[in-house]
Length: 242
Image 1 (cartoon, rainbow, N blue to C red):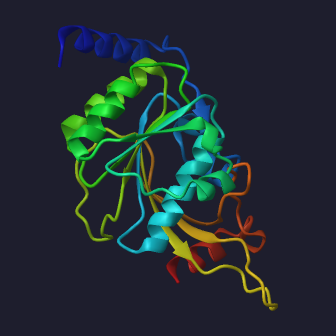
Image 2 (image 1 turned 90 degrees about the vertical axis):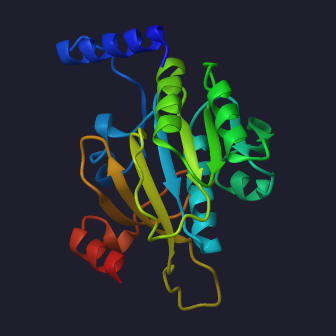
Image 3 (image 1 turned 60 degrees about the horizontal axis):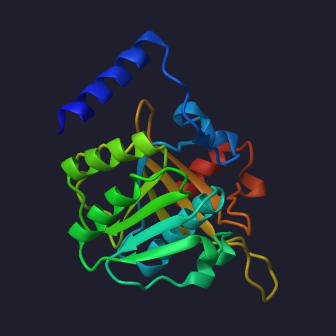
């Protein structure tokens, strides 16, 4: 790490200890049961976040739409760095992330994806930077976290097709999420209900892991709690365990 970066980090740590550090912007979900579990009441906009689905296509698709919904609620261009372009843009649009805001960076390899992410994070005013990778080292995550802190741009590492039993690796990410598809509400008529996901907060700095059953993103990127589970943590836990 360069000397200047070390000094900047030390100054920020001292300011935090002294209580003089400027409050950082957060992006709330608008759901108290989730926001209350996150430092500052939402996703930090100057930090690295990590998320994954699983080897099941439905879980990876849920994670992709969840991420699109978060980015839909930010402002500015979004850089989406990936090895090759296989995203279905209309699905992102349905979650509120307009194709006009997304700039794809087809990098060809994990190393190039991480390099592209770090370069994008040097620029402020972005809505977010996404990188799809198979693996993420602790060193790489630290570099991305520092870059996000400096630019105040939220960064997201999406671990595509990450097995459910993959061992947890060291990471500098402030939060780590896991998305899995969950059975939707039975309507009793031949129609499709709003998708549901099992949303797991596997790691959060200064907090405890949590698990919720949520309804998928609407056209503005907002998730919701199923009506029958609002204010019913006991039923939330039962459904999550099912």
